[in-house]
Amino acid sequence: MNPSRESQVLTVVLNYRTPDLTLRAVEAALREMEGIAGAITVVDNDSRDGSFEKLQQGVKERGWDRVRVLQSGRNGGYGAGNNHGIRQGLPDGSAPDYVYILNSDAFPEPGCIRVLLEHMERHPRVGFAGSRIHGEDGVYHRSAFRFPTPFSEFESAAATGPISFLLKRYIVHMPEPMDALEVDWMAGASLMVRQQVLDETGGFDERFFLYFEETDLCLRAKRAGWTAIYLPQSRVMHIGSVSTGMRTWKRMPGYWFDSRLWYFIKNHGVVYAAVATLAYVAGSLVLLTRQLFGKKRDGAPERFLSDLVSHALRSLWQRRLVGGRPS
Image: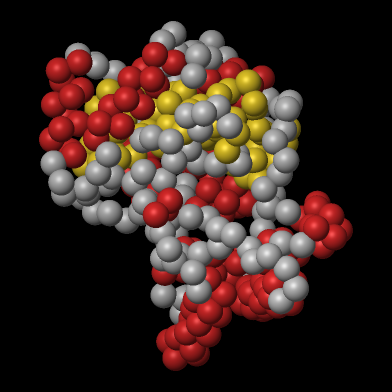
């Protein structure tokens, strides 16, 4: 990077059938981009509900000359949609120094983007900087994480105090950090990424339709020598799950299981993926035993364990038949 040139930030906001929220998110991002060189790109992820036209009209009416609206042309998922915006670069065709990824239902608070940018400017080996995410009530949403392992799979399924205590250093979601902290990966609702990292890694793996894509990207970057930093001074209000409808799910969708399995197979191999699934099954047996003598676990998706096992077996059979990746 040329130290005499002001760094450029490209903010990418991915829309899927939430045009009104997206315009609110863009308005908040524009405010926080004031004094920062760069632009904002809104990508409509093939909503096919009039979102693209509504976004174009909304930007035009508001006179937002730093904002452009693009159509992805296909709904390839979160990673593919963001990749589309990232690959377009800045309006003049040049690549930015940093890409700031913002969810369409996330609203940066004062200083949010600048805190991320200034930290990355001071620390050239930081590849990712992420924000503290909270709800409309101000309550912290899990934002800082460790990479998943068979130990974390066992702990999350068992949901038992002594086991969680013994395996606390493997639990994926970390206790809320009060200060800046190096972590494995962070929520993609508000995440700044160094363009050099995207160039070296190729960006998001579009094999993930939704979920695990930022985990995978951060792992690949870490293996290449980059670090990820959580900055609680950068704050974002996040409504959450508006595009996906996750709050109303009774069962986990198939693409969640696809993403989980592909994450383990791609990064650690088939045997590791099998061990991770067996670890979850073992943890579930611990929980089921406890439930014979106590209160049942609340909030778990319906038929999660059976869906997990059947998906793993089906994927194994498909690999044997075609020698490929899980579908």
